Image (cartoon, rainbow, N blue to C red):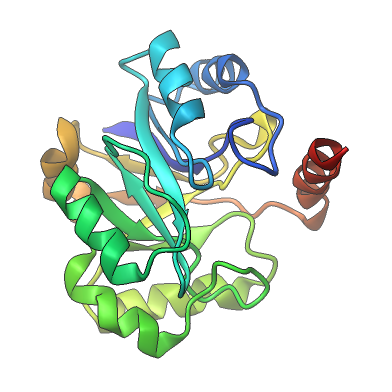
Length: 214
């Protein structure tokens, strides 16, 4: 089985200072086999990281819609923020992307979802994020896991790393795959290796946001 980090950020995100080269180095050092770089509304950092290590990096994006954030892998073209979930999903489908949903029940984040809005998009997603290391309270992840079970959804997990030292705190262990269709074929057999990130990890992204506003 391979180790997959499905959710992490580089300096292309407004709240991260992580250089793609440092992200790649951290993943290699920790023995992670594949990394989906999911910057906020950008694929620039993912492209930069993939140029360094094409075998390691999968281009992804965390896209803010009018209802919540969508987490995608194998993104071909950058998708802007602010579209409806339906518009965003349509574009992702046209690109053949693998589609998950970021921290769906995290009430403390702008990108959290209301359950009715989430139910509307379930037929069009491949999975939802059932564990996010940066969720402040365990109940947010528990609710996502129960929701996935109730609706027979596959689950993704991720560290949501905004600093290089966070990469790999939560990983999917799954069979080898090629491309988004291959990922869809193995995702339900994945095992999850998860670890919570304490509150002070959020200081790295807070600092990054403040530094970039200067």
